Image 1 (cartoon, one colour):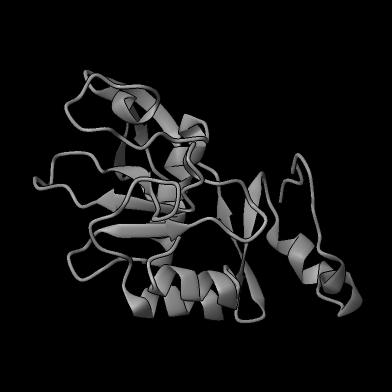
Image 2 (tube, rainbow, N blue to C red):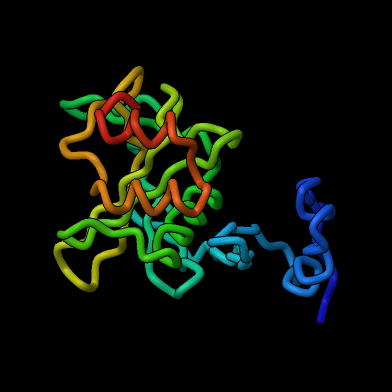
Length: 187
């Protein structure tokens, strides 16, 4: 097992309850720790840039799914309607998709959702903490996504499903305050 983690940030409460050894055993390479019901799993950042596309840059996600980081969500665009803009770099955008994909965080139509963990950077330049990844109409098309939000950010058509928001809360991804803000469409 390779121990090439760039940095290891271990919350103090882990060390105090003796979970540090199991955490270190789980960390191989450069991974991100996801808290799930008192246990930790690693979602490794393995997005790979595989080429360019007329609309942006193509990546292969952690699960080998094609993902397109679109140029229109990277800065001011000349489109008819304003677009939300990612505040994170392209590989992290793809990893945000990977985390949603690995967590199975979908709505009824098969679209993926993600939420920035408490204390992490916002996804969008206008403070958007949610990310929406629309299911491709054609199975051969790549996935793509964009940051969404209701306060300063771009309004979203429909919020993530309540059961998914509840799951994020139960997994300690978000606080109760954030949970209620998402449910009431104030995030």
